[in-house]
Image (cartoon, rainbow, N blue to C red; front, side, top):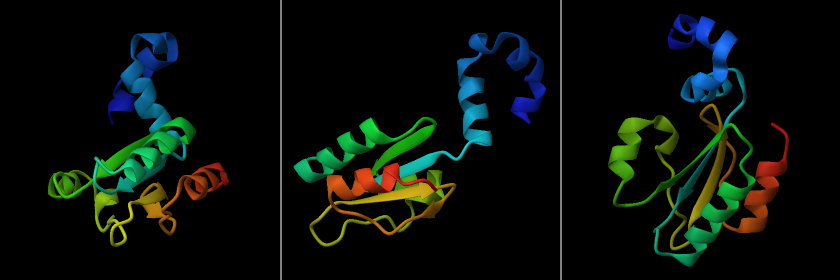
Length: 118
């Protein structure tokens, strides 16, 4: 609805509405959602986050879910539901419009998952 309401602005002066342009890209594209599940202080979690930020094509979203924010994020979006570390190992989940691949636990596997066409 918001995109339809602002169609005129987007078609004549898109640069004046960068947030609407980002919303339009997310709406018409196949944005990747990358959820990293693990403790933020764990170096493996940080490595997965860095790899996701560097490799995620635009448009895309990268989120970190951990014990301290899990409930709030699950209320915000279903993409965070059920995204857990595996034992002690952080996990990365690559999703498109809420459909997720099997989780991966290392940077090389995450990069491969992000590079594969969906």
